[in-house]
Each structure stands twice: as structure tokens, then as C-alpha cells.
Length: 312
Image (tube, rainbow, N blue to C red; front, top):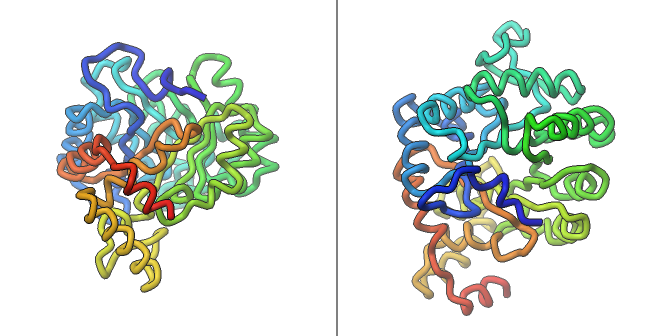
């Protein structure tokens, strides 16, 4: 399924890095604190690099990522960017109470109710300072049955009303995403870390199911939390320190890439886009320099011989 109508801006612009989005969890202080200035510079560099698709969520920094993205895009014409955010969680303050609409808190709690979807979106619109969302995901719904019964119908109504342009589900696991692709009226799903050079498990269930149901796939977590960007000794894999075996596999992939004059990170970004069901990739960055590098990687030419070796 082609999703150019939501991954690309409504207004025609001179240059767009098609199919590549900026993941905004890092500017919500994921793992490391980021200054307001650096967060703004990261988004500004993404725009300068031709990136027009931005992915955020209330869960990222308990609203901080959305607020910073909204501030960075405040003076940018709305129709020149495409914004994705998520529902399925409420933002809580230090006392465990839901923050006022548009507020930033200290943590989040799951809420798959229909009312929760509406409240979450209202709050996101306020933080982002926009009147519509291009892509609305349900964020990590562990209870699939409840999500299908409560949250998804509410999201369908929002799409029908034109408040959002497309709806989907985002998760770290491909098997439940395959169920959503088969059973829910969604336009796309986002799978994090399960269709990468190191983990291709989405090929077994999600990708064929999505293709069969005309549901597009967005690949996130393409570096598997960093190991495929730089497999150094202290590299992370799936949000934890990488094991010796995982580092060995990543370094073997890196050696193959170096032999062909390609950065491992470039191959990691380009890999999911080879699949016809994958409509785009989302790459997180916390600094302008990181954006410059992954934007260059996204446009790298990968020799067919390297893909043959990596596939083997």
C-alpha cells in the first residue's frame, strides 16, 4: 500500500527525503538529557536535510518530545510536514494524576479506552500546536482484544471525521501487529526492531499478513538500539547491553559493508526499504550531526553484491 499521502507533506516542496522520518524519542530525553536548543537544532537539521515526516508520542519524555517538536515546527507551514503521534497512554504527574490537557508529566500509564484515545489526542494536539495529525498510532497495546474492542473503533471515527489522515498500531513485536493487520481497519503498522539486519522475524508473520491485507509497514528501530549504528564494546541491543554473540554478528555485518565501501548504518537504514510492503523508515536522532549522518546514509547506494552477502 502506497502511503505517500501521509508520509509526505500536503504542500509540494523542492526536496523531500522520501520514505525517511525523524524519530523524536531522543529529543524527549530517551537515555540521555537533551537541551531545548539541541532539540530544536535536531529538528531544524532534519528539515534542512529534506526530512518532512516526524514521529513522536506522549510516552516519549511524558509529553516532552511532543512539546519540543511542536515548538521546533511552530514557524513551519503545517502542510509542508507530516506528523505522526500515538495514543494508548495517559501522562501522569509526580502524584500519579493525569496532567491537564497539553501538559508534560513524569511518566505514563496505559489507557486503551475510547475516551482515553480522545483525551490523549486532544492533549497531543495542544503540545504539538497543530489542529490535525497525519498518522495516529496505538502505542504498544499489550491487550489486543481490548484494543480491537475499544481503542481502534475510536481511532477509525477520528479518521472518518478527518481529525487524522491515517491510523495504525506501533509495537516492538511483530506477531500481535500481524493480528492487527488482519483484523483491524488500519492503514499501516509500525514495527520496531523486528525487521533489521540482525532481526528479520517480521518476515515470518507481519510482512506477509500486511501485504495480504493492503496494510503498509513502517520500520523503526532499524539500528536495534544502536548496535547497527556502531557495534562498539558498550553497544546496546533492544534496550539492553549487547551480548558477545550479538556484537560478533553485528561486526561480521560491518566487515562485509566495509569491504564494499558502505557504512553499516547506511545498510541498516536501506535494508527495510527493499521490501515492497515497507513504506518508510523512522530513525531517531538527538543532535543535528546525527541527523546529517543518517540523512546521508539514507541516500547511500548499496551494491547488489553486498545485499546478496548480507542476505546470506
